[in-house]
Length: 253
Image (cartoon, rainbow, N blue to C red; front, side, top):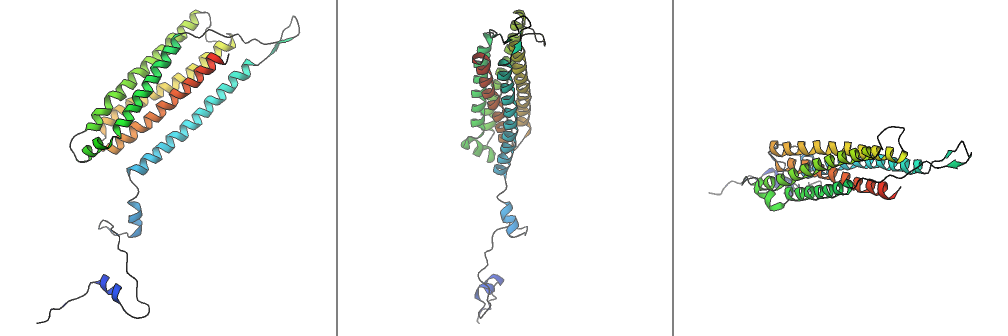
């Protein structure tokens, strides 16, 4: 007895003869939820795109912040070149007197460089493919265990840097250069520049604390990667900014 065979709709579309027949249909997987091409395109939007978006936002904000520091440096050199008239000689003279920077600033700089290196190590560990794969497979949290100590080390080194900056301010005050508008312009700018950078680094310390909390809260490794990556870029930028500002304070006078 001959078997009865009913062609599927897709085969009917492929074999329909005559003029106006439809070409083969490219049936892309949609996950069973319908939506066709729109869902196919949406599959390309995932953790990687979210990481790029967060990184773009952080870098854009940091670029604006670096512009602020650049304007501050311009004010530094403009004030350094300022002149005033001497009432006795009626001549224009400069009132900029260089100050001796506290030596602890260089130790603080070494601490900040070490903290940036430890933060970069944390960023590399959270993106290590073999560890991330194990977390995806539910075999543990090796990426988290490898990252936490380095983020903690960055936090400790950052706090030591801030403590060292406070010691530098006390040493400069003991030399007779207190922070007030009647002090020498060089010392005034020293307090302004180092104080604003310390404020930014305090925000970085808060970001490190939030990063440590999110490493424990987030179950998905990609969210932990985003938290560490964003914090690392902020911390690296503040480290580079300090190197530039220190060079201005030490050599620009």
